[in-house]
Amino acid sequence: MLTPAVEEYLEAIYKMLQGDRPLIAARLAETMDVSPPTVADMLKRLQEGGFVKVSRKDGITLTRKGKESAETLVRRHRLAERLLTDVLGLPWDEVHEEACRLEHAISDPVETKLLEVLDNPETCPHGHPIPGVKARGRRQETRPLSTLGVGEEGVIERITEEEPQLLQYLADLGMLPEAKISVREVAPFKGPLLVKVAGAQYALGQEVAAKIMVRKR
Image 1: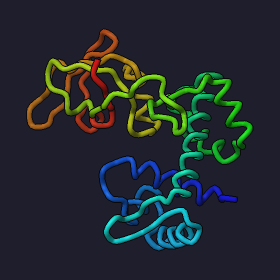
Image 2: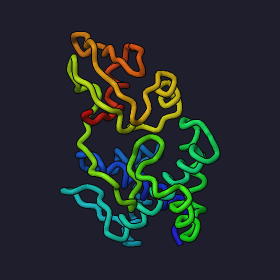
Image 3: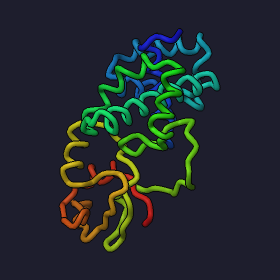
Image 4: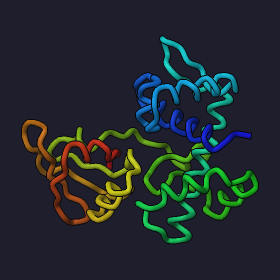
């Protein structure tokens, strides 16, 4: 049986591998907020358990066993977030931490029932896909809001970071998944964007805009 600590590492590795950068121990230590020796000990444990491979060329990668375990955990986390928002009515900026606690306790039968009750949701409240749930329609390519030019518009697909203050800020501005958004102005020298969403205009910094993924309308 996997311990919560091992599961947390597998979940973090899975999410970090969704990007296009090789995953190295230093980045993992930074994400987990632990020391390099602590990460080294856990990676050794994960390798011995057959969950990961580590090489100089490819960095840290998940084995088939590791990927399956990670996807199960991520799926249960995101289903828990859906339960907390859709059924219990918690704000979307509060559910991530609660789901982190719940995900370790969800069994196979409970997961099956959650999928049934929630009608097989494709994404979590923040727009991230739920592994193992078949998409009803073709998923379109997304790009960061920060890469859109003046006059371009799109639909918010997901928020890349589930940081509570960021989520609360975006919710206050109406920048939620499926909201239509357009770029009205872009300040020079990588300055803020003036965007329109829900009938109102807001100045949005490049750093925040880079965390909002949009698809074409």
